[in-house]
Length: 189
Image 1 (cartoon, rainbow, N blue to C red):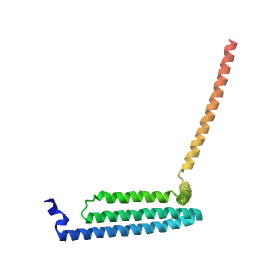
Image 2 (image 1 turned 90 degrees about the horizontal axis):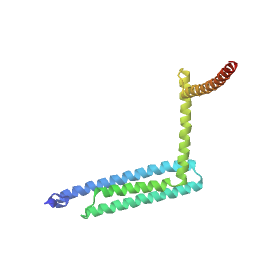
Image 3 (image 1 turned 30 degrees about the horizontal axis):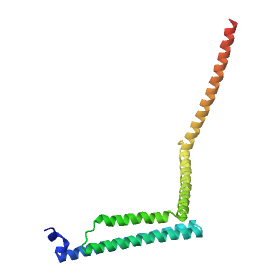
Image 4 (image 1 turned 120 degrees about the horizontal axis):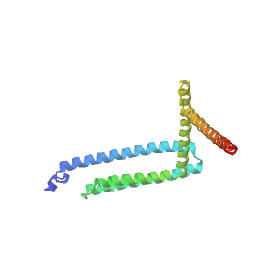
């Protein structure tokens, strides 16, 4: 009875099921290719700007490995789709796992290169430079508006700590003088 409700029982339902599945597979493949093309463009631009030829070569090899990983995942997903078409029970989680594992492996292939490290280092350096510029502009703007900046507050805090240190030193000297004076007055008696 369960088989009567399956797409295989009705050829029209089966055709619709297969058409939907083919469309989804084609759409997923197209999105994958577009994502890969976008990644390659941005990766090549970044790597060319920040790496030497040896790093670029190593980076290209890492990308080639990542590409092979994606193509292998595409092949495995296609094979499991054909298994599904032939009537084998295939859990949807298998497709998810194929792509998640491929993404993890491809990410590792690319990030384990010195080219990726160089690009990442350059990006972090540029971000820190930009942040410093923004902080300086914010400080200048706040200062011009009469507001205390972080640096102003830190300077006041440092001055307070210095004043407390000096006050403590004066108190210690005063205690010493008082003890000495009390000692002398005790000797006179």
